[in-house]
Image (tube, rainbow, N blue to C red; front, side, top):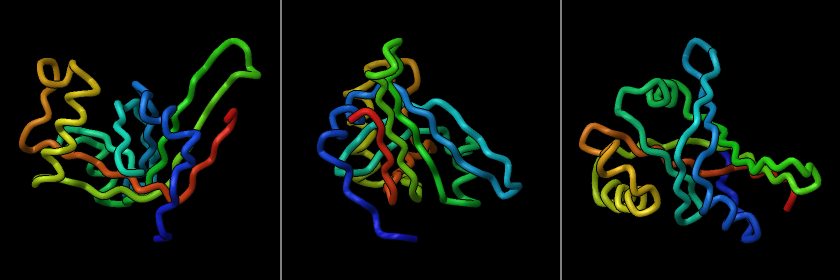
Length: 137
């Protein structure tokens, strides 16, 4: 694993305010799995909450490499913006940091507490970017 890189400060607000991104993982069988996720950015890392036995979690247990794409599509293609982060994931299953992150998810996505509460048994995925590729910034 390479050392995590710092996200460009010009890109941080875009990531911080994103309501959805696409996350790609690969399982032990080598089959890619791409799903939309609701991300939170904190301290230069991207976080995603998921059910504890989801395919994302099983894939990351087998292979912690991950890619996340954030994009802002507009009809004026000169104004398109996109960011791809590639790096490694760490699974957070409990503890003080898990609790802190759950509160960040609840603050950003007010639907979480009532519609999809993050509870014991759920996992928060921490993505440390080792490569950040941007366009339109």
